[in-house]
Figure 1 (cartoon, rainbow, N blue to C red):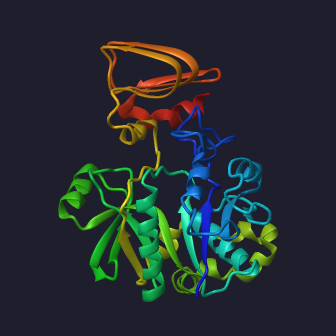
Figure 2 (cartoon, one colour; figure 1 turned 90 degrees about the horizontal axis):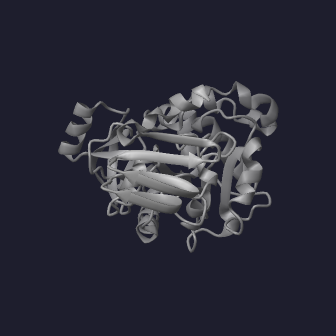
Length: 339
């Protein structure tokens, strides 16, 4: 019987929630919608499914201490972090992680579930049910199985997965599509044949390695050199797992998610987590809003007063105050380059 390992990818810079999230403390190590960090929430979703000693977190050396601080008692931290010598995108990161898993006791027949560390999922029961179906399909069909998010609007900020014919608990994958324009995203939604790509997938280790070798030989050729990753890791092409393997493989399937999902790609994404709130107050000592709605407020320890304003993002952290329209929430990157 195969063991199930989880691999949580936590090395991202996660600065899209600036000024709260910064390169010094990316969003996966922050408390956004609960009293636990996003990384803690991610690890906790595997309670009852994956033992602590079979949970691994991959990150960079600079972030190792933050991993250990923000995930206490949720994985066997001693010897269960995998460190990238430097960030090289997701394909090299995953290949290094598979190498480490095999050299730390995993079998090539074991299954690994690879997950981002900084997404919000409130329906844990639905997540676990979808995960169990996906794992069963990965084993039975000898496939890489990704979890697809059924879209509810024509989102232009996500990649899409096009489904083909039915297979097991889901579908074969016809294609992966890059982030579309609004017209294309609308056509995807209307067709009913597409899912959002959430970057969650699972497979037997041997299946992943076989597809690395077949689809991305320019990456897989570095396999043996990973025994000295500190010296050779920088030589591996820095490309994503989607581009290296997923888009080229004919062994990929998709299982529809039975849970909510939000990648917190910008401040305005928080409105979807709390759709019933007139104003989303994530943190503030006190907030008074007069004839104001649709605003997102994050101002720990501060009193916030709003009057006759709608659809704003208001963030006050330490010595930085940022106010901008929700529809322009992606502009935070411009502020980062100017401060």
